[in-house]
Image 1 (cartoon, rainbow, N blue to C red):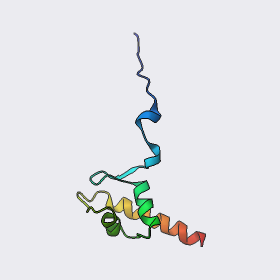
Image 2: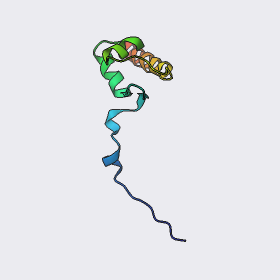
Image 3: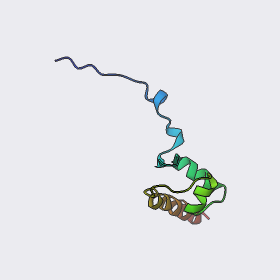
Image 4: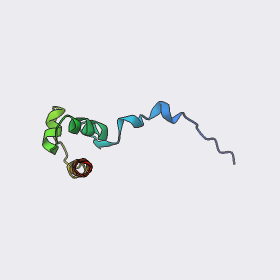
Length: 79
């Protein structure tokens, strides 16, 4: 049996610097959420407003809240 592997350059197909997708419906990544938070946004609803969108299916809300809570707790512990 001959097994042929399709080798690809991972870096040409995936952009890890964009972060992980949090909200697929609105194309929001963890990096975009961090950017909004760095601009002073600290609430899930306001993050959607920052990017001029609104929650669609709602599956991302709890994870987005976790990201916000983790970032704010890290920020407050550094001060």
